[in-house]
Image (tube, rainbow, N blue to C red; front, side, top):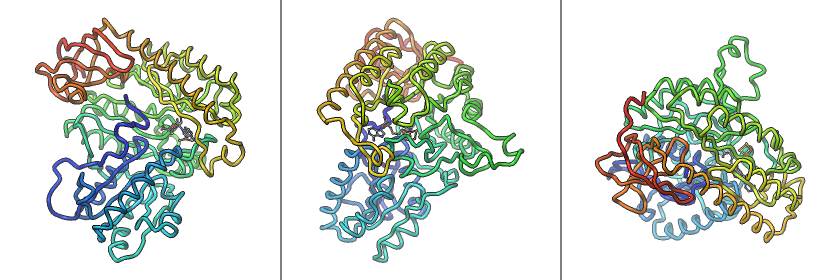
Length: 482
Ligand code: SAH
Ligand code: F3S
């Protein structure tokens, strides 16, 4: 599954294909969302320009970077444990430098650098172009820090190197930051205000990926539907743009169409959609272009109007259900997934039942479900007491997960007997004799390899399923995809 936070990849060291033997060695580990993994590719690209080559061996590294996540307390605890490990290695490699990147940078800079003295460098998500200077600083024995959040930085001019790539699917970031201010969420504080990337640079990156053999891109942003390019600058300043800027602005539906037309053989996905910003224009654009996958990750967080309001999610349960109905009317077989939070402050048993009943209404294909974790500095942390006991949060979360598993099985079983279009991503994790790929709706499919190749689009007849995977047999390549 395309997880927001994919547990199986958390902390895996990221590597550039064909690493060399010379130069200094960079070991970079990533935690958290896809955006962080995508940012690590930008970081590796910037440092490659400084002669760094990636290594998968921590013990060989001259520079260790950890791209961190603050979304829940657990994510921060994991990174803290890793920092202890790096420092143990550093005892035998005194010249080795350690840097913290990403969302924990701003929050914990003085603590990490000055109080605990466990890192040499702290770099926020908008300061990666400053890395060459910061590395020089630490080389000269000084601590280095840059956590300034930017109004313009989109890294549109940095060609990311692809790390740990399967050579078939890639992430392309299109917006940075978020203006939504959901009360539980730390992202607006750690990643700053929302800004969009120049559509031409997005199209160029997608064109280059196609040339390199990639066959699927996921356009990334905290809130992709809010994408708006009017020549640069913050989304919130659009009101002040000139008439010409306004008339030539590109919104998310426009960007999707541009990318879909530029590379008609490339599959296109996007993540994440926010219900309050998703327009039916986007859904219609998805329906219009065959190469835009029929899948929407549409986090809702709660099924209760009272809780949605307290979360500052700017839509109601009824509006969300209407959006689901509209999506299904325009794209009947659209895959839909959720994010859900159990145990937000003040959540009653009735609120929780509303969440379960919303899930029953939608019957999501899959979901990512979390117990509420209070994050310092957020509005919820400042204004609301984290008053739901852990045991209650866990029990509600378990009920949500169990219901989702039932719905996932219901959804996968609907595919059995059908023949689906699947892009081959690589060998199945469990069997070397099988390929793994995904349907347009983002469900994983496993089938015997035969003579098919990675990166090929094939039709697969589905004959069985679990709640997470479809099992089938290829019946032939997809012809005339364009
Ligand atoms: N718009 C973002 C959302 C980022 S956070 C995106 O692109 O995915 C991913 C998910 O983490 C959220 O949808 C929410 O379900 C969960 N989350 C965020 N803050 C949380 C918190 N304080 N406690 C528990 N879960 C949280
Ligand atoms: Fe966070 Fe809400 Fe933005 S969940 S990333 S503030 S859309």
